[in-house]
Image (cartoon, rainbow, N blue to C red; front, side, top):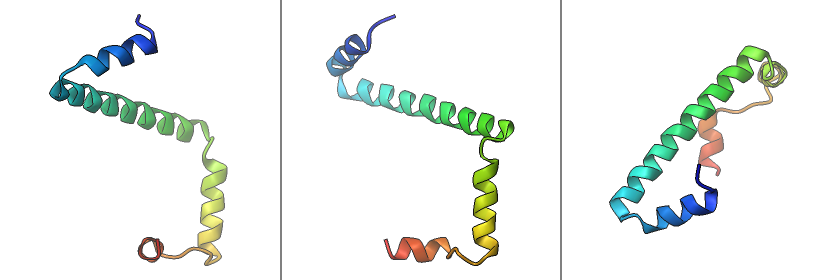
Amino acid sequence: MSTVAEIKSAFEQLPEHEAWEVADWIQEVMEARWDRQITDDIASGRLDKLAEQAMSHYQAGRVKPLHEFLDNA
């Protein structure tokens, strides 16, 4: 296994089209890891408290539509 420094150095030597290919692949891998983490967190109940809190805020009317938030950003 190469070190991070070796991988970075090798990446910098790649032609641009190959660098983009690697960047796209890294993005896909990281997105898959994120999806697995979220799935695991949901299954384990780690997000239950946050979900309950969000529903509580929603039911109490302490939220606004997303488009209103985005329009003011």
